[in-house]
Length: 408
Ligand SMILES: Cc1ncc(COP(=O)(O)O)c(C=O)c1O
Image (cartoon, protein in one colour):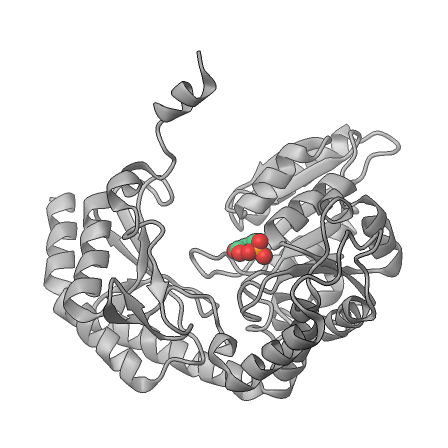
């Protein structure tokens, strides 16, 4: 059978959200300057779906840095992979800044978080090793697992007994040259709960292993200095390889891992997604370093983010919504319902109230549940929050009636 004919008939993983929802539920076009107020289908909307946690994407000072760096270097430079011709002092200075920020001795830049972490897992785990990961891990970890050659096992989400079981099982099967890599997240992006890092780290005393933490959502938002979930939970030293992306709090593209120099040296020579790919453009590295410096100099951005998070969350709870007990700015509203309800909520909020949110239904969340995820940022203001709460109050009867019908 012709390959193209075959894939045409293959069901999409996006299910009913795909074809009829293109441009609306999937691939929506949010237009105008990045920020909490954008245009969707020519309509003004308050946006709660962008991970620009610290409001950096709409910061005028940063825009000037971007423009100056682009004018100086162009978007083309440098050419080639870093190993060959694509390295620069700016890339190296950024790595130093990142390592210093997250309290690790060294760091390695990655062009993309997703590809980077996959490739890091691939590089680290050989056929004698064991990879143990949380079942709710991001796709980049799950896909990294596919590349890894060792034995893989999964533990129930944030369940220390389940983790222990997998850890001791791995221990019992180890050969002389076997090692264990454990991978989990700092903040779980859909539900906002934190990984049980201190509990996991404590078990190193019983079975030695190395811990890689994907802190995509915690980097820049958590910890007294913004250095992430490890700092927040007072266990940054127990994280052997810390991963952060620029795609969220830094509002950019690119990512990094931070660890001991011997590990970074090994990764420089073995992370294939970097060795065989053009390096990050100069303006990205220049602005990334400036952004990190500014994040460190402006703790009030994080304070505002948290202020907005608490106002939004308390307001939603007061109306009667079930806001999951998130420990990060991620604000998940859970209700009972079908995919249709999920789409209805998104449409009503967008069309009747000018509020843009994203939602997910089965199979991303269990059948019969709908999760609406709001991402507050430091750029939102009280008016955005009040208008949004008013919108949620206005659709409440509709949402709760659908839930009641389902449980009847
Ligand atoms: C938990 C997590 N890990 C990794 C990534 C991938 O990062 P990037 O967008 O830099 O590829 C994301 C999403 O951006 C994420 O949410």
